[in-house]
Image (cartoon, rainbow, N blue to C red; front, side):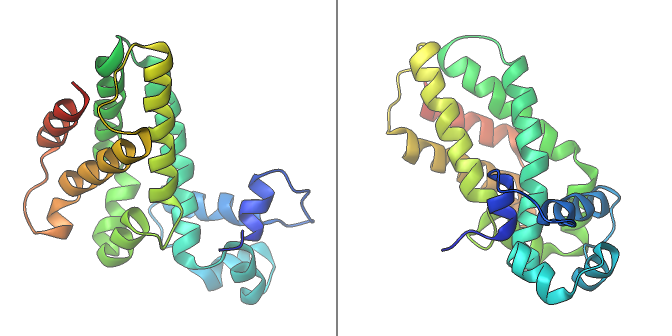
Length: 196
C-alpha cells in the first residue's frame, strides 16, 4: 500500500501552505474536544476541497487512526519514561499504564459511544494505522527489554507484540466485541503469563 501524503509529511517531506499535518492537527483538536471528525467540515475549515483532503489522508478511518496514534504514541512515551523494574516487570508496568491511560481517555470513550463500529475498525483492524503502529511499538519495547532489562522472550518479538496488543484489545473492548464487561485485570494477568 502506498503512503498517504500525511504519512510522507510525518516522515519529513516538506509541506505546502496548508498541509496534511494541518489536517491531522485539526482532526485531533475536534477529537479531543469530543466533536465528530467530519471530512466536509474539516476540508472547509482547512480551505481545501474534499478530494484534496481525502488524497492527503486516505480515508476518514485512516485519519482517525492517525489521530488515535498521535495520542497513543504520547501515552506510550510517558509510560516508558515512568516504567521501573527489570525484565517482565518493566514491560508489565508499561502495559498496565497504557491500559489505565486508555480507560481514562474521555475523548476516546466518547468516540466509541458515538461511533462504535467505526471505532472498533479504527482501533483493531488494518483499516487504519493504529494497530500496526501499536504492534510495532510493543515489539520495540520487548526488544529494548531483552537488550537492556534482562527479559528472556518466550516467543519472537513480533509475535509476542501482536499477541499482547490483541489481548489488550480483547479485554479493553470486550463490551464492543462480545457485549461482556471489560476486564483490564485479566489482560494484565494474561500478559504476565506470556512474559514470565
